[in-house]
Image (cartoon, rainbow, N blue to C red; front, side, top):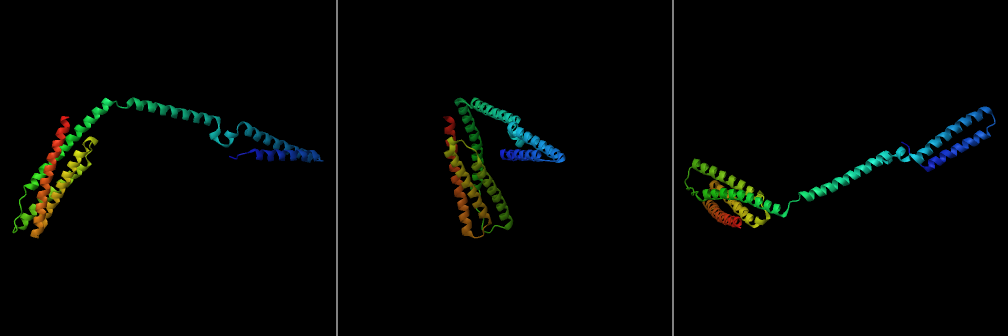
Length: 239
């Protein structure tokens, strides 16, 4: 829709005045009548647009400036402010008290301890399986070697999964140091599983011996770390 500003209205009224002058200066009746009609039409148009300019320019040019739109906008702003204040009030009312926060912290610690102990027990069992592995004979047949490799691969996969589970386990900040020991133990066990599997696939005697000893050493270290971890958890629960 066209926007008629003050300059446009001034031009329109100027045209109307020129038409009036032309009508006055007309000599014949026909020209005077025609000029008069045109002049009246121009003045009517000028009056209409002047009225729109003065009374309803906002509604005519931009619906957003109409009284209805302005009222709706004010109501929306008022509702938003009311909702914000209500939200702040609810959030303050719903904010847990100190006692509730302490209870949640206790429950969070209990959940962590239950999950962490389960992981530690599984890791300890896998470490025992690795430590119970006997060295393969040099003249072992292929079928026996493949069977040993299959068992070692299963252990390797389980140690890797357990390490990921320990790393991703949510823990409260109060047990961050203890949780690091769990992660360290399961990571060492994962490396032990990889070394054991590598041992069953190698042909060089020296390399095989190195991998086997590494697997045994890392498994024993993991068990020692796990024992210390569980002892620290017991102390936390006794507090």
